[in-house]
Length: 306
Image (cartoon, rainbow, N blue to C red; front, side):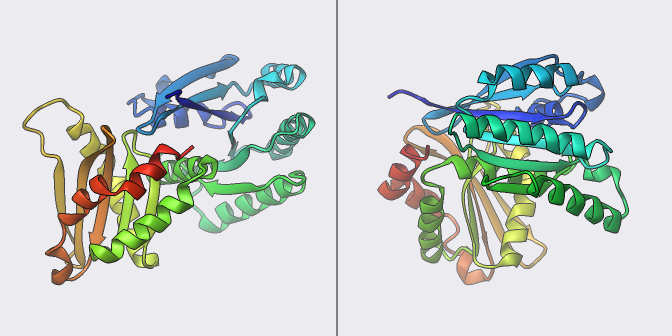
């Protein structure tokens, strides 16, 4: 089977935070002070659990490079997903919106409509929440004014808020998928069988590919667990130590239990998190793994995820 390659472009002005986001998604522990501005275009490939890979294009944001990209145009061809990063503290928001407008014009010219996600980044530098909201709304207005007929999703992010990065990336990736909604529906049906209030299905790099939550509370709890514990758990599971546990159970603030396990589907590594409340639900806490492994519906959806 030929592997599907997903082209993801990260663009924006210089010092917007593109490279630090990519390094985080690679799960490499770079100190932020070690990162240098990208010179031109750098490409990084990530193999997914599914029969697919991602090629991440980190496009340096200095003015001379931006002009080259726009003139050359081909760098944006065949883009599946564009992450446009804006530093909300940078006064050059008009310049950022103009650059995005030029990129959209290229997509329109070649009759392509990639998924577009705008990250309103570096929220951690603004402690005043009202000021942060004011800047976010201002930038949204400027970008919505130039978006033409493109659909754009916005996320407020910080490199120090792991969930904000992983969540925006996972949702962006799901936008590219042909089967994400179908997978979410399948997990919803499974949740009833295993008494789950929430389920996350995660591929080996930590990206959420499917999810279900019965309400906002359970969604917040399982996403919090995912944010704080999933990367550490995956590191342990992939350490190569035969004595390494492949399951973790948490008593979550006396409100319920969370179960995190590794699982092989089609001989490929995935993880899931299940959150449930009530003792009668915990009795069935180990059932989900066997159902996921044996479910032909889940396997078929994942095989055709992209």
